Image (cartoon, rainbow, N blue to C red; front, side, top):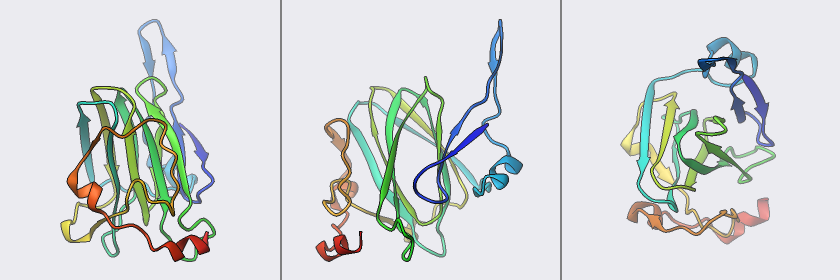
Length: 182
């Protein structure tokens, strides 16, 4: 594995280092000791799969509040997504800043999302599947979200949103005064 830090401390793009021959390739997608050496949280409590029928499906921004916060490692195993994370750590120099990357079955990149970050993605193809390795069990009472189109965040999505759940459409906007902290 090759771990590439992003501009948001604690997050990283994880690239496979493949061993190839005439059969194809083999690669380590997760290694506890390599995650620890890179300063990433290696705990895996749950593995989840999300399947999306249509291009333009947006899921998020989701996060679990303390004490049930969770780190995630996201990999697109079919199709392609534009994955975006937002730093929610008050006092962080990148508080409310975001980072986005394209994850696809073709590029095989994964994005490690630290605790206290919000996460969302937009599907770039039909029939997209996403695998999540999560450090904490889902806690319904701790689930929160941000609006995908919040002007304070200013995320520039690469394509129009065509499918959005009622829950994701209803997350509240951040107060406009929050923008002064950026």
